[in-house]
Length: 363
Image (cartoon, rainbow, N blue to C red; front, side, top):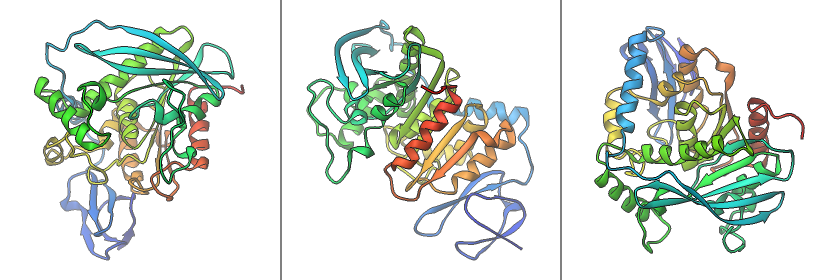
């Protein structure tokens, strides 16, 4: 009997390395299955029947489209983006915009233009909470940004990409833009914004809104002559990693994606929170939906950085997707095992991955 470990592809009767129990996978449907040892979830690619049929693949696409949903018909506004401030940082120049993203609402959008290289620049979309947290200072005031107990290397990822020769686009997440109030910067505000969003757009989802707002940045990258519309990628961490993954799978204009420690399995992070999927997660699990399906329907090269929420079990999702898309070599896992933050060596690997797939030559 074969002893199996997290992330392996299995078929038949196997022994789980972390619990010692015997598992007959022929009693399970195909797909990525998760098992808890009481401390963390382990993932296996259960492969009994083989590659899904074309009809099954079409159903996967329809299922995901249904759960992402769409905004209400009243979600109509003028597509407009207005520059209101220029600033400078170490190795880049920056621009701040007010970009309409909902009826009567706008998001603060930030563009970083590198001092290295020349236009049109390869461009990376970087989803996260607010622009301040990816450059290490407030672009409005110049005040240094700090987080207790964390070094600047753990948050200034946008600055690092710009210093490496990439243009960077990011925007404020909808917890700040969909409602206007003085609530504290915590998940209470996220929940309030998501509740209001879904009240106005009952057939949408929080994940759909996050995807929508960041796709507006891809629109900008395709319209600005200083940015190369044929060399656009995405990189996100944590919440931003979730969005980066969905963009990799659903935004055909992207050429590469890096998603860091975002929780590829349903129970690795807070997918059930209302600002992502809410109660839909249970229904998605009941339909045997999992993120390997979306990855299988895409061809975008993807690097997952794991450190805390993600782990070696990510390989099960990669192997499952590779059955359909056939390019396992373009799905990479960097498991640094050092916690939730991105260490410098993983950031360097991400930059090399983006340089390769965005066709960035020596600068």
